[in-house]
Image (cartoon, rainbow, N blue to C red; front, side, top):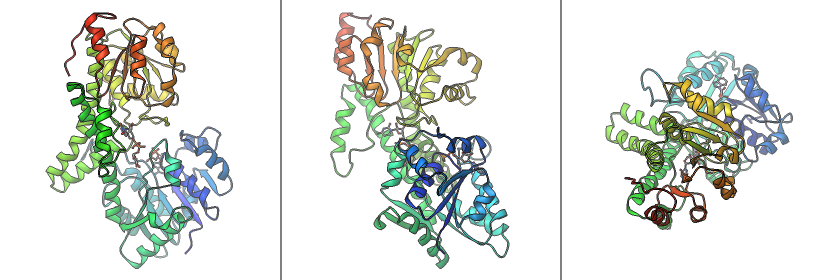
Length: 484
Ligand code: UDX
Ligand code: ADP
């Protein structure tokens, strides 16, 4: 069999970019991306794609209508395909057994049942969504228990390692492509078919094959290791704030050790995104189920540290603003979980803003890509507030950062958008209440320039001596005490 037709179920952050790049790099393959959401499909077929991802518009424009198609016709997609990617969402369960930790596999299961119902002939089913270990086995069970004699399946695991904001580059130049398959002749054949697709643009030595379970666990472990690095440097940032060390200097020194390396050591207000938290909790849940409580506790601490970092930052804002933010106006710059994406899933901004709203602050929120409706949804959702009506009256969204900063007591930077570095902070300061504060949760602005301008400046993992001098001399504002 040579794969001629690929179907991808789920046109989200993973399925959309991945299959667009496959279509671009494999003109000999027809790629059909299907989704149950008519709205999503309509957007994929329009000039404004449903997700913002640098470089993606050009790829989609190049292939759409030629060998890349987006539709809601899931059955047709499945029937025509030789190989089917399952790229649906696997959120953390919000109810029942494993609530708050286990991944909810209802969407994956629905796909498996749909495939079993309509498929004809032989199909390779590839699990792309992040799933708990042994999910491929469950998919196989559902498929084999529901199929007719003339239909057969091979299930593979091919986890996606793309990061949002750099998805197209990550897909074009992956560190590795991981394919897990059943250890049998049929499994090897299916692995070879999927490998053939990737060899259109990925060097063979970068394609790694493993057992299905190793592949599934590698995805969880990779995200857990990355999240652990962020929590480790954030833990050190708390020590820096308490001692006078600078976390950037510590990170640079630590990262020079070639065994450690420099990446993912940027202290921040905490990690967000759809994967880190979900995968960590999933790993914790699996460890608990396997009766490995020490392993579960170890990984749980990585997410606990993340929560501590977010809360610590919010508390520091309140404490610096003379222990109250009630009725004070704070301009919030950035709501996405990181730069170059409009995605807000698990964004630290949601938690920091909720904490400030809880304290009665008024928030003027500016983000270059996040839709106001999304911000409203995130801040009024039942998982973050008991009183959505009150919260609704306390925040506004802005499309102009200068308007957002007008008459504000403080600016709070929560996402690392590059454009924030180039704002005219003098102009902002002139329109703000005094003393004017700036809280840089991403450690990305020119702090000495801000202090020179007259901002009281606070950031993660560092305390400023000049701020302290100002404090002592009472030059700009009354002294206050801040206990870390
Ligand atoms: C992550 C993994 O990187 C990717 O391989 C996987 O497929 C999906 O999950 P993503 O969530 O898109 O990707 O973004 P990532 O760049 O990993 O950042 C995650 C969070 O950590 C962001 O909130 C980011 O701001 C934060 N972060 C990252 C830091 O706070 N400090 C760092 O040094 C790096
Ligand atoms: P991810 O970040 O994992 O890609 P998203 O939420 O961005 O997650 O995308 C998942 C997509 O899968 C959504 O567009 C959703 O509508 C789609 N989806 C979920 N279940 C099904 C299903 N059973 N059939 C078709 N599409 C589905």
